[in-house]
Length: 436
Image: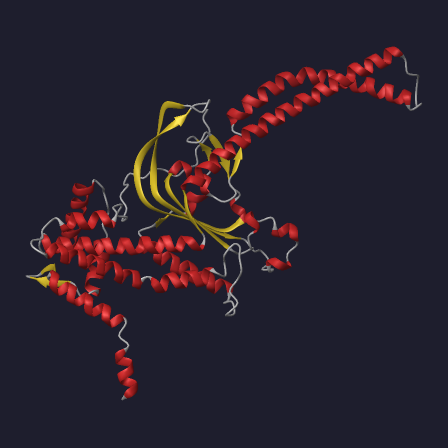
């Protein structure tokens, strides 16, 4: 009977709001459609303007994330220029800002119930894993980009077999972990043994963040902190079977051998009897039995340790080559992803309304953009049309035409963006007010 798998169930709808197309591919493709004369160059300028604007728009969030996270970094110096905020309030601020950025970068979160079920058999790496979730205060997993795929399952010898497994593949996975601090005692006041109990000598109450790429749902358990490779039923049979068959005869000989050795030892110490040549020969034979038993047990333990080390290396290698960034460095990657996603959403909505004409409703525009992405790049996306329209309205690029959703002409859009950018860094108004 196969071991029960605790990986989450595969969803029928694999579409997400994530647009898995590089902006450097998207913009030139759009510029080739629906423009005449020099409009293509103006469209490129518009896209560059939008990218610069959203880059500036995210600056405050990036700074806030870095500043707050400095108090929760697993290792390294703490800030000294300002007093620490109340820990729980600072932690809520960190989570709130991170969740906002994750949403704008089109990440979704796994439910807590699914995370608790992770573990068990890992058919892709032919291992069984276990994670001590109780050692952590919080474990959260976010994902972005999801598609159906099949993977080859290795056979018992590690070679690829013809058996395939249906699974999901995620473009990006973020793991957010907060270590426990049960009594609130500062780390430096804790005994050395308790300080070393946390992975990487991390501070109690600190937060670890890791970002991975191209992860299958089967691999999710291996991304959890302190994942342990445990012996599967197959391994138990392969190692325990020979040990049981070879161990029974040894055990039957060990007890008589021990009695002979004890008798000879007692004679040498003068407790009972005398040492004869016959007893010495029996003692030597008994010792050889004990040495053989010890060698057999050591060999079985070495086989188990080697197999466990081999499986642990498989897990470590798999995670190592798919890790993108860690801790504070993750924020740079997330902010960059959020900037690009928001820019692409606005560009797609503006281009569609400008070149294909006004849309009668948001649903019509949504269907139009999703169909174009599938036709041009063979990707299925659940486009966030309401978010895109909201951004267009905030930028002053949205308009109404005969009761339909429309956008301002390209030249007017560039003028409005230029004015908007100048207002971001307009210091002359404040100087005039001071002079007056």
